[in-house]
Amino acid sequence: MLHGPNLNLLGEREPSVYGSMTLIQLNQKLRSFGKKKGIQLRIHQSNSEGVLIDLLHKYRKWADGIVFNPAAYTHYSYAIRDAISSISIPTIEVHLSDIYKREEFRKVSVLEAVCLKQISGLGLQSYILAMECLLSSPEMSD
Ligand code: DQA
Image (tube, rainbow, N blue to C red):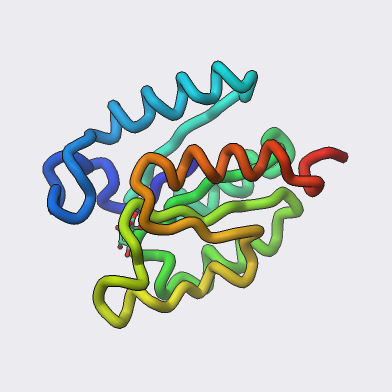
């Protein structure tokens, strides 16, 4: 599970857009869902593009799938796009808010094409659905 830039400020950052749940609370819910489903979960947040790329590299052999909220990098990071397409495990792009109902620049994801799926606008449920989707994905079965 990877959280991109500014998501460390969840809870105090634009609560009308992102809600009042902190990243710690969000992660607690993700961990308890993971536990229920028998998923071994590693969760990281970084504000740095390079660190996120290093994490994709680091976990490429360990993880069966990645749930990734790339935050603003979604809209312009070709380096993250290349990192996702360089690894062979399925990645799901998630967003708390609905990126299609906000500013024009958010409607473009340069990552979507290299991800298995994009889930946007469902808050916590975006992440939960992404985990469910990975669990039922044939890409994860071998
Ligand atoms: C976000 C949407 C992005 O446009 C924004 O830059 C974020 C959060 C979301 O979860 O809704 O930081 O990825």
